[in-house]
Image 1 (spheres, rainbow, N blue to C red):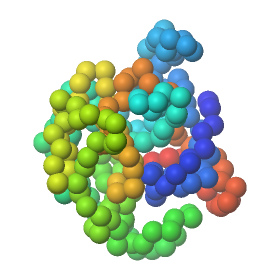
Image 2 (tube, rainbow, N blue to C red):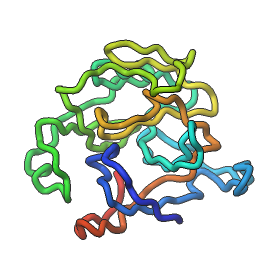
Image 3 (cartoon, one colour):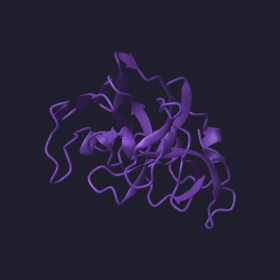
Length: 207
């Protein structure tokens, strides 16, 4: 296990700044420290998993996002709607009381949705006042595997790569903007919030 501190709001409402989470580094196997060569295989990341990984453009930085697409998948994110392999990810509104009772969450009921992905449900933030347009981050050239437009992005994920997104969809730089996460960059699966020194109620499993 390894602790990881959430530095930004890109994973709200699931994770908020200041959360300390536990990461299981052996969820997907065991790798050598420097080469990251896998010596013991285990399960593979699944859609809906929250993972910590080395940021591909700068592997010295660790990021945390949710797995949306697996190797070989087609991921379509147009007009803020997620479709994986032709199957839309269902969206529903959360009960208002559930939002009001959310631990330390600041956003309102109108922009929260419950998304079902890979048989798992989790909350996301969709802000209708922010454009759906997706452009690669500065210095990153568009990949041949993705098509960009004012409505969003369509990607075919290469073998050995994963497509990740933040739950705060309009406030997250993720695979839509800088590309895929190589399997060798994945550190482990985040599974538990164990502390937040600014909000002592933040404690429990990550969904």
